[in-house]
Length: 302
Ligand code: ZN
Image (cartoon, rainbow, N blue to C red; front, side, top):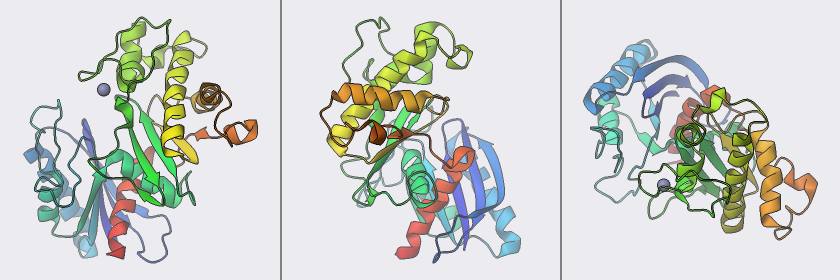
């Protein structure tokens, strides 16, 4: 099975031609890959299609495709807007028909979901959430988003979960007003990479370990994780993204989430169970591509 896997991001589209088996669910092999800057929808999507046409020609073309897309996106199967980006501050992309354009261009069945749901599904099949029926994949970087896997499947509904935009009680020592254009001091507004930079006047990568920025960051993330644990009962939380993967952060968030829960939620009252509750994802830099391929393999069951 030759898979066109696409990690559609706000700054670049990472495309990979992968080979995988529909029946044994072993991890796919990456045959070719490229990165295409996100410019206009027409230009970007045409470049994506051209890459796959060229790379798959000698292998008899692509069989199925999977796209993990930046959001928010319309995922309702019955909606006329299915597969489109809904409202984004990114110029030209509001209403862009990402799934339909790519499906028509590639001429194969195409699975489409959020980038975080794709990453979550990849971690479920081949990464740090193998065998779990309930977990969360949270990414903290330029923005904060999350995929929810519950009862053995990805959660969709009214729309898709937006774990980054929940409002949390603010920490009293934090004077930063928050940077979300919609909610100001939601989790993304307080704890994304840009929020760290605005609050401290320097980007996170320039702030050394031990800087108070990191304890504040861990406390906000712990507050969010405690809320997710109470509402969704995930067995594990994977913390990805440029900020989220910072060494030591997941471990600290685990401990502080336990403090936030204040002994209320067994089995997280057990320090051993709590340790490792929040951890880094396992698929690393290829998580987006592998996740998009994982989405595509869901089409095998249809
Ligand atoms: Zn927000």
